Each structure stands twice: as C-alpha cells, then as structure tokens.
Image 1: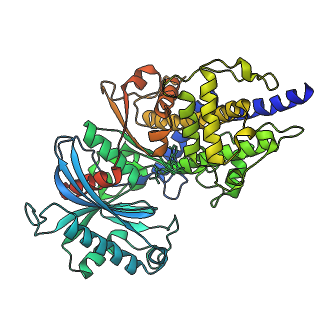
Image 2: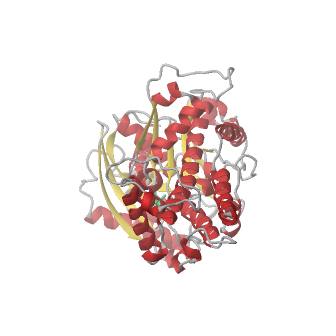
Image 3: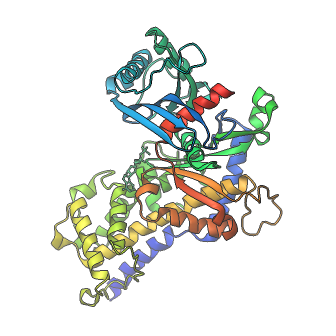
Length: 506
Ligand code: ADP
C-alpha cells in the first residue's frame, strides 16, 4: 500500500504542475500586456509586434481576382483567388515541391523556381483570362504569404531577417523579399506584379474578416502559434515620425506571440517543459509556443509517459515497458492526443465525468458500461500508435494516458485563451479581474471576431470550448458572449489576395 501511495503522489504531482490557477492566468495576461507594450514601443524585443502596414480589415464586399503565393513549409502553393464581394470566394490552387537543393542554394535559383511555378500555374490551372478588367496595363496582381521572420517597411517591402524551417538560400538574408520575387518575374518577362507581403497570421485575420464581415484577431494554433490584431497606430510608438504614424488610424500587428515569456517570468515551467526546451533546436526561444503548439504537445506527453514507465519503486504505466515509437525524439504526434480524446468522447459525444480511482483501487470489473468501451477504444489507439501489444495495456493505463493528454491539452487551451483575452484587454474591449480603471471602448460592438486556423483548433476535440471557458474567467461572460471564434481556412491564399487588393487601394 505504501508503494501505491508513492506512485499516487507522482500522479498527483503531475496534475498539480500542469494545472494553472485562474489567478496565475491573470498574471500571465498582465505579462502579455507588458510585452505587447514593449514590442509596440521598440524594435528587437522578444515579442516583435511587427507592423504589417495593413491599415484596415475587409468587410466581405471586396471584389477581384488575384494570384497568391504561399512559401513557408514543405510545399510552395500557388493559388488563384476570386473574391466575389459577398463574403464568398473561389480558390484554385496547385502545390509545388521545394527541393532541399533549392532551399539551400542561391536565392535567385529559388525565386526563379517560384516564378516558373507561377507561370506554369497560370498557363495550366488558372481559369481566368488575366488580360481583361485590369486597370494598370495587363499586370496580374499577386499577394505573397511568406512565413519567415521579415522586417516589413511597407505593404510591399520587407527585409528577410533570417531563414528558418530548413531554408538557407544564399544572398537572401538582408534582401527585400518582394524585390527578389519581382526580379524573378521580370527576368522571365512575366506580367505579374507582387503588391503585398503577408504573414499567415495576418492572412487568417483578413480571411475571417472577409467571410464574416469583420474581425479583430487572427490566431494560429498549428505547428506553431502566433496572433495578429488590429491596433491603434497611436500606440505603435516605434513608428513615431513615419508617414504611417502621421496618417493615424489602425494597423494590423503581427505579434509573434510564440516568443512570449522568453525571459521565463510568467509561465509555470514543469520539469517536462524544461527537458523539452533543453533538447529543442532553439532553447530559451519561443517559450509560449512550446506550451501550446502542435509541434510540442505530443512531445510533452511522451516525456510524461516515459517518466511513468520508468517510475520507481514500481512502474506506473505499461508494466514498465517502452516501445521504439515512444523512445523516439518527437515520436508521439499531437494527433495522438486528439485521437485519445476523441476515443474518450466517442460517438455519443458525452465526455463522461470520470474520477480516476486511486492507484491500487482500479477495478476493471467495476467499470460501468459507458466508461468501459471508451477505455477500450483508447487502448486500441495506444496499441496502434505506440505499437504496444494489447496485453501490455491495462484499462488503468488507458485511463491514466487519457488524463495526461487532457492535462497537457487543457493547459494549452487555457494559455491560448489567455493570449486572446490579453488582446481584448489591450484593445480596450475588456478588463482583467480586479481592474476597475482601464478605459473601456467599443462597448456597443455586438460581435468581436476572432479567426483561427491550425490543426490543434481544428482537430482537438472541444479546443474552442476550452478557450471560451478561459475567456469567461478572465474577461467575464458579457465580453465572452460577444466573441465570435471561427475557423478561417485557406488564410494564406485568401488573406494574400485581400492584402493585394488593399495595396491597390492605398
Ligand atoms: P501548419 O501550422 O504547419 O500550417 P497544421 O495546422 O496542419 O500546419 O499543424 C500541423 C501540426 O498539428 C503538427 O505539429 C501536428 O503534430 C499537429 N496535428 C496534426 N494533426 C493533428 C490532430 N488531429 N490534432 C492535433 N494536432 C494535430
């Protein structure tokens, strides 16, 4: 019994470490406000708060046909986007592989390839006759979603700061990315003009605004996490003295909030978070992202599971056995967590409240006929994904794994909600608990639009509900009820098109 007590305390300890109290979430939201302001005032801060030079958001009436390019992952995407002016759009796209040779060779070769891909798309895939209905000569306008760090100085100008994600093309860093692209179009005598450079988070915001008639925030919860929102230019002190500042009004800010708390002031790190960070390719960077995003959540769960497999004096999971899938660095995809949660919820959609009995008191024969099939389904997911033999997985193992996945996902959702709440406070739409002085504006705005994208929000069961629960706790039900969270898929294509349109208007 003493041994079970020891093991139980290990589990209790994990639960305690991964549960963030509402009071702590409030302090984290305040931390966001501090870092927002630092980034708005200065260059070179952890949260970069990058000005995008996008000075308005769509309302759904926008019309036009544009090309869009998306470079930032494994594939290069070329799209044609038709904005119908009634909140709907049509999108045709083709993906092109970007080889490692191109990623790591000369920038001119990479951009030549991009131009060739656009050319090939226009001749074989596009349905539009690009020569009709154009105002300026016969140029086709293109928006470029480029998801690498860029210091933007205009809607169509931005210097590449550094490559990430396996790219290292030479003679690109410190160059204007729009110019690199335009030069490649011009070398091929293509009548394509790149008029806008967009980050994918900004694309998500603009897309949501277009399809729903307006939006304040765009947020990505996918491989990484980031957010963009509409800010008063007057608060963008680092632009003081610039033409944009003189014009006043609003500007979309790309927060780069994945870097929140790189100073490790606010987020309660567990030993698992520290291990993950230490073994990552970017220790001490993207601290917030490592608590939230698809790239890392599965890895955190993997570390916890291994610690329970290895627990002394007695193993807590899987009879002390591991598998090669579980031993592999990043061997457990966040999709596993979604699958476990979906298996638990099941087709009846009832997320049964289930108290995990104390270790040693788990009795398979006492599982009721709702809980037993749920745990059985989780056992199947574990066997298939982690390659365990079915006989090595007990019902108790399944129940423990499910609760671990829920702990890590709930923490991610609570922190995601905290970031959104912080933007609501930053933009004077809400106050944090205990604050009675912050000036409130926009109080008769009936809907506050939040566009989201990424596998985590899209596929983790009830992730949005969990975000909402945190919003209620941090900014109150009255504000939370007005917040409309909606998916904005295809953000990199439609957002680039919307941005190109705005560039032509400005
Ligand atoms: P990106 O952010 O690169 O555009 P996605 O939004 O598709 O792409 O996110 C991919 C990330 O989401 C990967 O880190 C992967 O581990 C994770 N992921 C993939 N499928 C799921 C799922 N069903 N549930 C939760 N996370 C998932």
